[in-house]
Picture 1 (cartoon, rainbow over the protein chains, first blue to last red):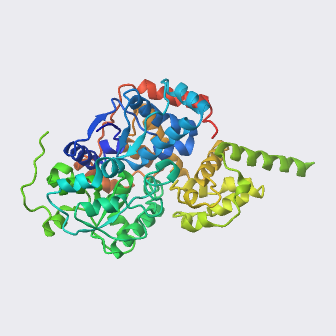
Picture 2: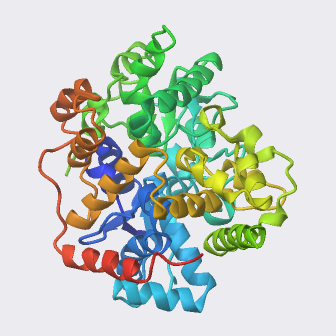
Picture 3: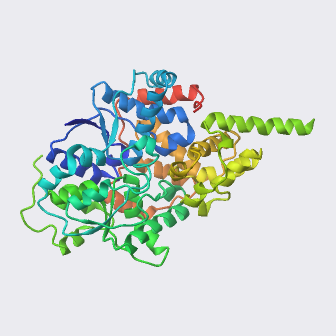
Length: 299
Length: 187
């Protein structure tokens, strides 16, 4: 199984744990990732807020590079995934748009390949059965809230791999890893994205609602598939909780980190030691990291 | 005569926003589902439903003054739930872009953030998080915003003072130039 790999800007910086753990679990499960050489930014929200053609052309360049190799693209970042899918759909749906985008990027792009969310590649490509077989350190019934956010599941005509209101892909993955996925009503609520930076007063309120509802549902941690969701829930957790006079100490995970833990890798090798809310003590208390011997990274 | 002129202007704005967004304003029957589920509605001056209503009634000037299109997080909840499949996030983009063209930047901080992001991408081919945060802070007049978060981010190796620049920056610069030359494009 081979995919072009589009990490996106965040995975080289604030979300380096996601990059590290995604590559590690892919290798473990026999998924070959060919990182798109010299990939460029997808333009994110800033591009589509300001310039429609630019917002399609920026992701299209990366899709075109993968298309030339005949590969579908595995995309960990939910925001990049959404933008790549938007470019794909626009080009597939209209010959004139195809010509325009090809002209802007200076490459022939026909949208014969597809962007796939890394979560989709793992759960539906590799399959839960195969993942389950590889689990050596089950998550000991850890109660986790699967948090999908917006761009992984909406709008459904673009994302097209799970239910937009009550997605279950990550919930099933948590169960396959030996955890317990809690039922909660904020799994697809928006974290505010870059509002947390541009209008922190507004962003922090949105972040708090998600954290609070996860906690009230009995979750011991939140699992994400998006670097921006992660950053907001992790880095701004103290700020969000403090704005309501609370302290939450709710660890946030990328689903790939939990896969790595269950597959037997050490927290440090997966990047779990660079979170703002340190998740390692909880994993230790729940004795998830105990025997058998932790795998060492072999790279 | 004056009345006819004003009418023409509001009609022009209406069709412009419709063309840019691909939304047919009369599709909306004002059920309000968009606004009931909007996670940012609490911070808006007009709810998303009201913004559409303003446009439907030819009160587009008022919609252009609204902060709502600037605060929309593009979370797609409204569009996903709309029984009439009105692509509200696209409509918000179109209103916002038209407001910007007229120099009505109603949420300056949001705009500064977006422009800092895009200039980073144009310059390096990728978004340089630390550089864009510094640019955002300086331009928005809050030099010490989130300053306490910077040291741990640096220490954890999550941000870098040196931007990652792609080899073929010229190609990305060309993409910006050609998209601009085409005027951003219609839907």
